[in-house]
Length: 437
Image 1 (cartoon, rainbow, N blue to C red):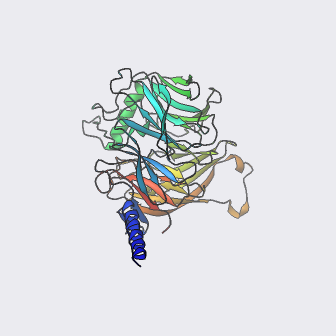
Image 2: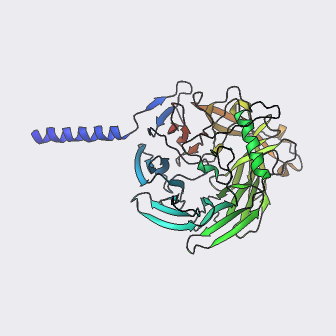
Image 3: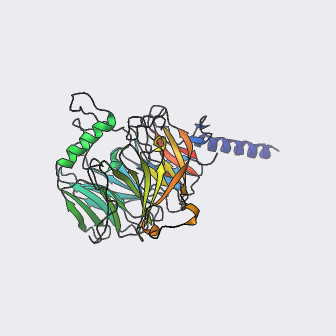
């Protein structure tokens, strides 16, 4: 009898321990009815990866995040957080699509030359291995078979903001725990809004004509190969999630001033502009690959701040599909669910490009095609943009969120949750929301 009681007691203690290991904050959003989990509780904040960076294992069971003390692993089944690599000077980059590896960068404080070493940590065992040393530049992506690193280098790393809080030659994934900080005055000497000040700083960086390179590093041999060299501002480098030889990158700057989205092969061939602007003040950007690597999607506005689309370009055929987005549902970043049937949007505040009066929500979008009237098709219909609309559902009320920190939504591999960053309760933390109610 005593042994039976002891077993019951031990089981209860084990259950209690497991319960305490899970996030203590879970609630139902009063506005949307969706369940939210606060994954991290770091006093100094934590961050998930930038929206197009892969943070999940190939098996879809774990995710990596940044914490003040290094890199941690989140088990998606119970949202438990386990340290993986400790170090305050580490930069989490991405996870592999073939192996269960978390890639990160480390730069020695006493290295005046700025060389960076790239490491990979086994997500299960924690064992680390050196991958490559990057003498100049930074790494932004890895290809689908994990044979090549993709990076960018600028001859001068001038800050976008004069106080040095935002760099102009580094990938956007550098923003982790802090919020962007842009400030500038207009021609009348009056302070500009955050969004307009950002445009001023972007233009200053573009006009500086700093020599830049996009390069690959062969993980097996260490060979560095320049793919693109230019005095244009090159940024947002990313490999296709499925094609090991396909690169997408952007010409950065004020979006209405540049033809932004480009693709190229790793051998330097096949350079192609994805979207050519045809209207003054038209903008396109925040491009990303579909999960299957067949489409490129991007925020398109015709013109800026007035008419909003999520636009798609099919790589194999050149077909185009545009989904109209209402002003309040315009989002800083979009993403696509693994089932390809839904998209996410992370909304925006009234000062941002859409000037949305009520746009501070996370959304799930279901695309709806606009059919030909009465089944009558234009002779060249297949060559025209296929239009559509979005059926939108509010997923999270973000009205307490400061959008200087971008939420950067990603879908979990099973498509059941959206992971995002937020400062809704003060510090920057990582959250997940259940897609279905």
